[in-house]
Image (cartoon, rainbow, N blue to C red; front, side, top):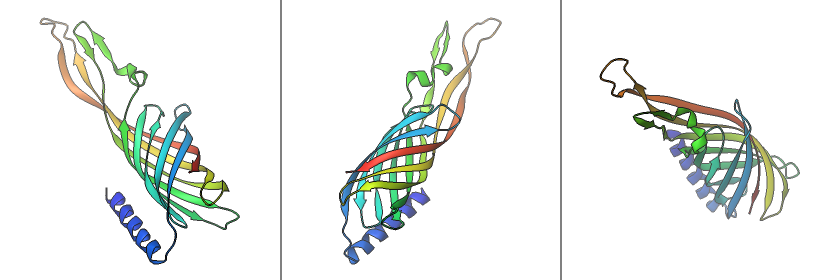
Length: 197
């Protein structure tokens, strides 16, 4: 939370500096498609972000759908800095925010327990989302640009389920022993392509 507050303060300071130096600011919308690869199979991510762009800085908010291992919906703030010569338009970016758990039924079918007494299903808790990377703008005009980036992304979440004990002696009632927690941290490389509209 402290990092997010510090980032917001830096963005506001940069915005006030841009206004003082009369640098033009424009609004942008950026659809992005990415491939995620870690210790699980390659998965996809779709993201839409938007915000304000000054001469070399872009900052805004975004949301998407992340299908890596367990489906989730990242919601984040975004900071992007252009650097390098005009002939070699490079940039660095940072995304920080929440990872909202949104699992498919196939994501947690391993932890659905059936018995004569009924079913016990899992419950998910949201976590954090962060991504850091660099990229190259291959084609651009004053109002549009297409870019490709390579980054490192992490999402966290937790899964809860009740562990059940079935006694071997009477009474044969179901006994709930305890609630179990599985904490997940998914670290991935992400290759993205996007365009600024």
